Image (cartoon, rainbow, N blue to C red; front, side, top):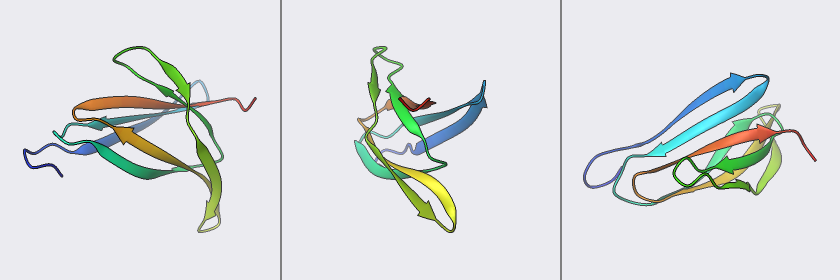
Amino acid sequence: MGKHGGMLSYIHKVRNDRNIFYFANSTDEAVEVDVVLRGRLTLQSWNPDDGIISDVTSSADKQNGMHCTLARLKLGPVQSVFFVAVPAQ
């Protein structure tokens, strides 16, 4: 991915019963992809660069008999973001 190396990577952790997904784009190109996350989740985007927290537009689905959440991930070159599952409102 990317002419000059780098990659799109992620880490998933559970802290205090909360799912936290960290996505990082280390390429020199923007990335826009759909991500499939296990479970029915209400997500917020937490930007580590500017501290802005916003809701993530997502939809529920079922794949291979498991509930999942579909969300669009958009990251500029060399950017990262946290998707944090929050209690449904």
